[in-house]
Image (cartoon, rainbow, N blue to C red; front, side, top):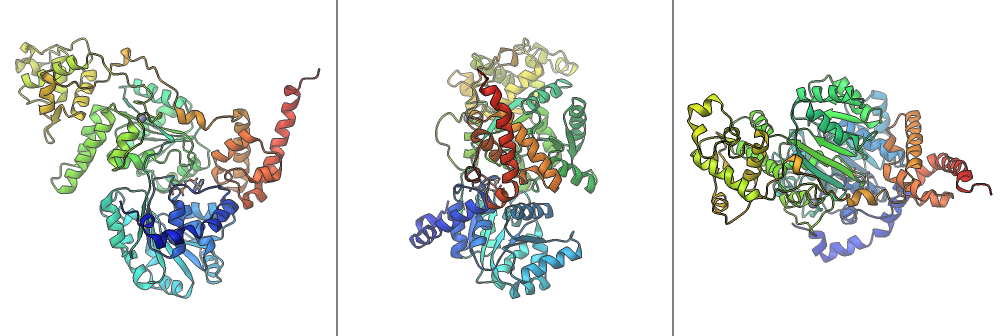
Length: 629
Ligand code: ADP
Ligand code: ZN
């Protein structure tokens, strides 16, 4: 990791100087009292005019890294963003905080376009957003040459890399910026963590001696859970149980296929959830309408394929549920990362089934090239995460090359004691491994599970496997349970699955288990598992002292204000702000302004309304609190 800012003295001096004005900007426009990790360093690079690459997880506060310094610099910061919806959202959010910003895009009415150009010409805009295609148009380059460009910020910079998960060829042309504007800083921002993508960004943008800042990938406010998926109708009941914990809150349910989206969506609607679907097979306007309904809190849940992605920066998503195995841990980090951007607790659950692996192999195709092999390896890593029994936060951090301090994250099913391990895992593991040996390592998981549970299928009889000593060794268990154990043995390296045929083979570690020299860890069957669950630490903390009833009434007030202004509710105030209001119940304007997330502009716009609401609230409660003697 090249954290060059930290080891370069001159840069360190430069970065110390602008701290006070930056803090002032943060408080005045955003109502924030401090920097998030690496924001200070990232902002210092911008102010110092030193190119930079900033890698922060979703919710890490990347946009502020360029927005805040833009307010302290002469000229206009030009922000490259891949999606119109992303641009519009950011510009609206900036406007709500009193920051002059505009965007230029192809779906804009000509008058609006002219107005933005005119404001930019007059030097009125601190930030100007545009798509990469526009940025390399000769007319636009001329316009920029005449304008005063403070610096360039490239959002979602991984789009420039083939190795990223979202390659966009139009990003490649951005290399031209360093040629045409050699004196303007170019700053790249992404949440994609792999070193290869990072190197690609630096070289493709031709960044000069950039400061590379890489944040911590762990998201402590996310509670991770993984559960084997129930079959048939039971899987909807299982899903409903997970959703019931978040009634009335925003969340995303991801499915692998469009068909699954439709069926899950219908099942949830029937059970009274406010849901809409989202996938690439729907008309553009239906998709947009559904996405808007989600942003505006008209519905709670969006059921979607991964097509529902990058444009989503709703900060108060309280849960992300996968009804099937994600494609890779990179994808999972991105998708689950859409939960809890506001830093408040959120839950990320994966329901997986053994069949998901095969479904993905079908979707990925059986190409033999390097990228096909890489994809299959990533899928295997994902599967190992799902079937694993160790701390999920740790697994994810380690996957991204980082370590996690402490033993107990307090926010995953493993650390919360929800995964109950079998006591006789060694014996069960040995039975399974011996059966694989007896089958001469020529059969897959399903067949092996069938033999172990004593199935009398024609194929088994024809092969004479009903006469094996291992036939029916685990007949007291269901076949699907035995399949899960086989998966767990694969993920722990006791068994190896042939990539092409799926046949199982005992590894050297597996042989040590057979000889009793090592023991696997197997998850107990559901009946035996009476979870001694501890309460999730993070979830408790952020509700400390919050008057829930008041919180709900503030939420209703927020919704009505947002509706009247035709903006998403989170642009009025985020959940963190509402909770703090419901905790501290500020009485004076000064106390109100001191609340997290309330800057001068929002104070002017909403302060009086919210304070009146709080006053009315107190008045209503007073008689109850002080009953007449
Ligand atoms: P990213 O683009 O990295 O996913 P965002 O820029 O959308 O992250 O920021 C995530 C959330 O964190 C937003 O709600 C944002 O307003 C908030 N945030 C950003 N910087 C700060 C800060 N210094 N203090 C508190 N909240 C912040
Ligand atoms: Zn954990």
